[in-house]
Amino acid sequence: MRPGADLDSLADRNPRVPPEQLVAELVPPPRFADVRFGTYVPAPEHPSQAEAVAGMSAFGERVLTGGGASRGGLGGLFKRKSAPAGPPGIYLDGGFGVGKTHLLSSLYHQVVTEGGRTAAYGTFVEYTNLVGALGFRPAVDALAPHALVCIDEFELDDPGDTVLMSRLMRELVDRGVRLAATSNTLPGSLGEGRFAAQDFQREIQALAGQFAVQRVDGEDYRHRGLPAAPDPLADEDVERVAAGRQGATFDDFPTVLAHLAQVHPSRYGAMVGSTSAVCLRGVSTVSDQMVGLRLVVLADRLYDRDIPVVASGVPFDAVFTDELLHGGYRKKYLRAVSRLSALARDGAALA
Image 1 (cartoon, rainbow, N blue to C red):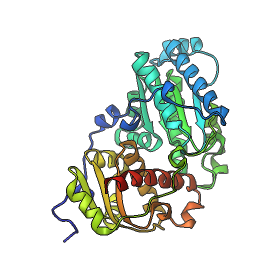
Image 2: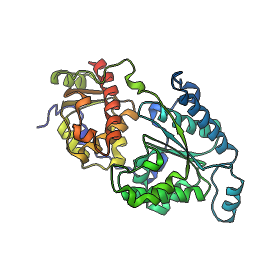
Image 3: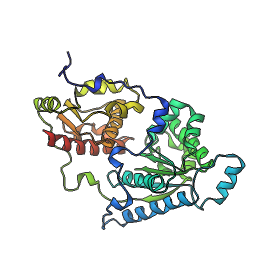
Image 4: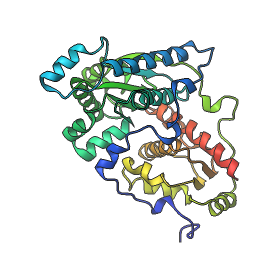
C-alpha cells in the first residue's frame, strides 16, 4: 500500500487534455496573470533591465500599430510590406530569475488586455506538444490568427525540435504574426552542448534571423538575500501538512518520478492544476537525464501555478547530480533548482 493511502496523490492523476483545450490554455500562467511593465522593478545596477522594459514595450506598440496577423495570399504579402521595419520578433536573453517571464507576460497583456488584439503565450515545450497533438498544419492554422505568439523558455533539446520550430516560426511570420521569446541562450547558440549543432547551423541561424536580441542582466531575484534552498522537513511533518491542507497531494518522490514517465509533459499542468500544495516524502538526487528533464517540466508547471512544495529528503539544491548540472542542459536544471527552492520556502512556511 502506498504511503498516506487516504490522501490525494499526484501518482493517481493522468488527465486527458483535448487538443482544443491546449490552444485555449496558451495564456500566461496564473503567477503572471496580473503583471505589467509598470510592476517590473528594474535594478539600478543593471541598466539593461530598464532597457528591456522600454524595448519590449516599444515592440508591443509595433504589434498594435502594424505587426498583426494576416491571412496569407496576396493580402498577406501586402500586409507584410506595410508592417514596421526590423526583425519580426524580439528575443530576451538573460540568466534565470532576472524577470524575463514577467516581461514576456507584460508584453502579452499590453497586446491583449490593453490593445484588444489576440495573442498566444506558452513555453517552448508547450508549442512542440501542440504540434504533436494537432499536427503541423492545424497548429499553424490555430496560431496564425494571433497578432503575437510568445514563446517562453526557448530551448532546443534535439535536432527535430530545431527544424520543427524553425519551420513553424517561418510560416507564422509569413502570415504576419509577430514573435517574442525568452531564453538563457543567445539564438545563434541554441543547441550548443546538446547535439551536433554545427550540423543544423542553417536552421539555427534561420531562427536567429527572426529576432532582435534584447539582453537582460541581473541576479536571480528568487535568491536575493535568501539561502539557496531551505532545509528539508521530517517525513512526519510532510505527511502532517498534506493531511491538514485541503487540496494537497502526498507522494513518495520516486513514485512521482516514475509516474511522470507515464504522463505526456503537455498534461503536467492539468495534473497539478487543482493542487494547493505538493507534499513529497524522500526527495533524492536524480542522475538519469530523462528523469531529470521530466522533473524540470514539472517544476516549471508548479512554479507557473505558484504551488508550494513541502518536502523531506535532500534539499532541492542537491536534487540533480553534478554531471547533470554541468552537462548540455545545465541551464534548465539550474532554473529548476531555483524554482523548486523558491516553492520549498513557501512549503516550509506551511509547516
